[in-house]
Length: 356
Image (cartoon, rainbow, N blue to C red; front, side):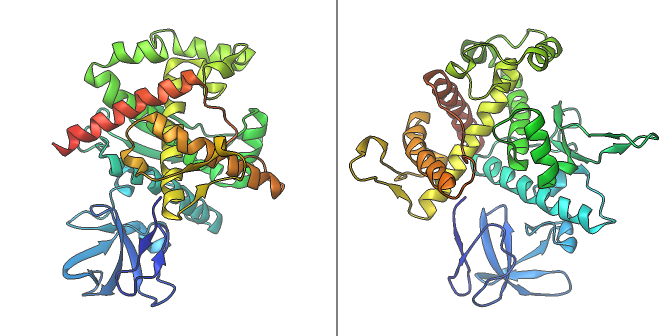
């Protein structure tokens, strides 16, 4: 994520800021510009851009509960991200509102990447059968008092996210029980969006042959593959070929996991570049690195990985110095880098098509 600047006073502002800390102007993110803007109040619910007073905008309808800070142009009530929501968390309690705020924050980070690359994300009005739509599901309480957790998943454009995973304790419990090294709300969004992107850029664009050459044959029975994974775990030596144990369960999951990691890497590198972070440990040139390119326009996955490895090593070392677990507990083997290269070509190719 890059840094932004207040249009009024040039103060550094961040993606989730609501007000400028220097001049106190109201701030909003305009998806069409991919930029934060300082605002002046207009008539009723209308705001004007400080940098362009003739341009009038409104806040997303979800701004009322401080769920969203994105702006809308035109007649829509909801912003480019929130218009995809169908079922939202329960807002009758402060806990429910807090969950939705954290879910919305992660969702907007996903959409920032989709918009940067101009990746397809039709809603259900544009694509009734396979458009992107989100249900944020509450756990169900049975008559005997047993709680049945809602499921996070994807099916033909419908992404379901368990709302309770917005609570740190619940998410950590799930991570521990599933023996995962890493589990975040943003990771859920990026992984499940990977399944949607597979539909749109691979299946629907006759890209199966190229996909199978890298990830394997997705025609193997999916339910059986997952059952085998949960019953017996990943195959021995999975680390040599997969980014995670779950990626080894089925080619669809391998693609989704790699897509999520591609977004992790690119967006974090953009953040590092925005802050001018360079890794140059004295006497250890082999793990030095600098983000001297725009990550969202990288020439190759190899270029991304060459910058990412030194940065992730440094971040992990800093985390350990604070008594915290590694921020990025994964190894990028050569086969995984080849998969990231496939994704790089797929995403950059889609971006070129979208700009034409």
